Image (tube, rainbow, N blue to C red):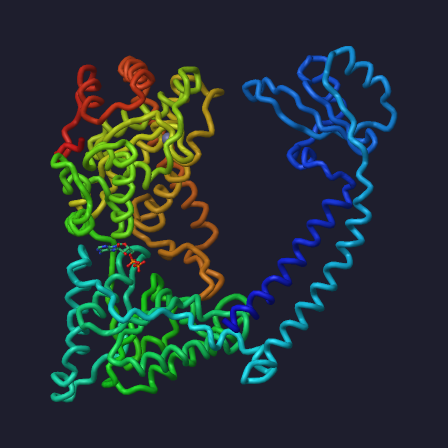
Length: 628
Ligand code: ADP
Ligand code: ZN
């Protein structure tokens, strides 16, 4: 209670300060009318006159003694919506009034508010008074505390930022799809439950385990499951909680955390995002970061400070083990690393089974189908997916989740919210040709993943989408497949150009082209799939990362760089020509598919292939269980 008051005051003061300036700003405008604030856009006086002549102006309100006006006008470019704009008027425009009368426009003048001055004065007084009162309050409170006035500066220390769960209630059964990780961690449970088994033969119990993997793969869940299985308390904190503005706060949190943990041993300490504190010391732009280094040092000290047999095991999670300080990874610290990756198809099925336990699924739903449709999804994505589907089901007032909801939820998780479809017009047709272009290349090229569906229902940023079913069983990608993907991604632009001509191509292909360039470049620089030969010319992580060297060194000369560019170009051009040829040769089936797509909004893969097969041979592709 006593702390919360102090925090309240500390936070209220800056907030008041900010609020005060905004408030002052509002009055110094001299206009107290809210109408002013709603008109964010401006219009020139000339434009305003044009609008007036075109009878688009409906209302004019004058402010500031006739110096500005808020104009309501109908904008034909925005579906005739009315729009409020602000116009600065020239000092002498008496003819304007006549004109407004003549056009029958509503107009009104608003007086200048002069009570602003009084408010301004009051405002000026209020702030210092509040500040003094606040400081007074702060000092009084802190001197009331047993620790004396010095306590006022102690914030951070006493705030327990870590959470403790006496019982997590999570078991290994709740974690699915990451069997190897589970097996390795099974041992940790035994350490916690029967340490004597190990100490009797002189084995040193590990202190730290590092879980490495992308977000959402279940690292936190695993750590909780260990605590749950061993029936020990679970302490957790995120690495970012350690990193504070004040030097020393993070270190004191580490001390607090370990103190609490020792009192509750045996137990698990879980540190999420350990890379936030555990970066290499002295790295990054501008040298080291004192606070982080102190925190890290404290963490290392604490880890060394307790014997392996106290029964505390620290589990840390990160996605970037490569940036961690080497000292953290030494024996006696986080000497075990366990990879936790996004699950494969079988793993996804298991995760789905776990999360479907408490959901009402329609008997027609096969979890395997969902697993097949969701390559790259992490455990968290899958949990989210089933939840979204359940929400949709409730909204549609159905008894149980059907495949339709699952399908909509997948689309939503992958591509964003559904928008309203366009009405049938030229641009809709253009988008339809673009998508059919992608789908046609995908269908006709043997090496391309089969089409799952083509749709004109907008989602997220995309106006239309073509979905493919990736084949996950194969691990490696061949050169032919990469080229097919590039050609497929170019299919949209190729269709636009062949059907509508050079001048009509749109920006809609921007994203496609980005992917195309990325793939082509990788073929040249990473996979040795060009005339430059089997060389690796670029490091895997192209990004600048502050934890390591700032400048990444390229492994080749200027001359090679320009050859890389020309090879990338050659690949893309070849694929583009190929895509355009396919569009020209299949014009009649395209026209038919576009008509159908504009009418139905969505064509599924099977129907698409059947229609194409009426015109031209469609190569066989590996068969999957049909989806939907
Ligand atoms: P991370 O710590 O790796 O970012 P979390 O453990 O916080 O991921 O996962 C978030 C949620 O996603 C979990 O609470 C759980 O519901 C679900 N989840 C993630 N991975 C799995 C998995 N392997 N099995 C079951 N559920 C999972
Ligand atoms: Zn496209």
